[in-house]
Length: 296
Image (cartoon, one colour):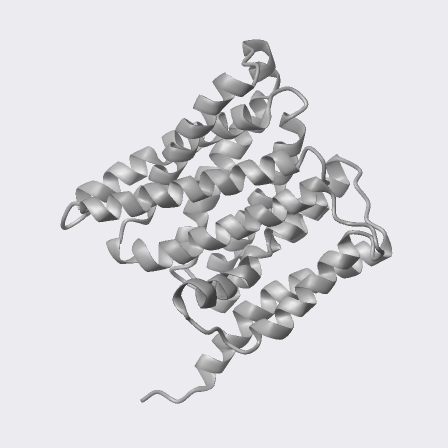
């Protein structure tokens, strides 16, 4: 596979994730957020399960107990992030949700300093200020505070930032990325469905009504998009992968405009550009500097 083909796979994954924001928003016209999350990730887990089983058969040794515990904890973080995002979509727009979720890329190095004293590249600090300015413009550029849904989406970004950190520290050495994916999908589905049966109405007719969104979010923006990401990143650089995967936010705004008729004022568009620029800065500049350093 050429690098161009790999980047196209990553671009497709970003588009699927962006379209997933529309599916998440419209599904809640029929069913509650917890039920949608549970059904979505049950389908995602089942769609990826054959690949996880094949990965397990090819593994040289089984996973240890502490590795399974790390996978389960990462699943809890995914559930928290998805729930905050899904409930947030009740009171925020798909466009806002798409861009604010992308702030997890900026939050990761901050949490690294706070939790583990891992100091980031210095480009992170101006990028963070750029992102904060973008959030202010996205909220209207005035004294009005963000809506509850926007704050929940920022909480979602924080939880996903923690997920990224703990994947890096606890799970990357296992060589079992698909097993990790299926585990976190399963944890999210079990918790969400259990809570849905307690706190939300579960109606078969409503589930049928939201079935297209559930299936899309489960199979395409879940299983297939994750697989495309794994394949694509084997044949391209990390900085290029970040650019193409970050287009999730752009596609979220694009599809919201096409399917939901959402429109942003000029200040909001500038805010989106600033947030997107911050996401790219913290990914690309450190990678470029590493490439310029001579090999030892």
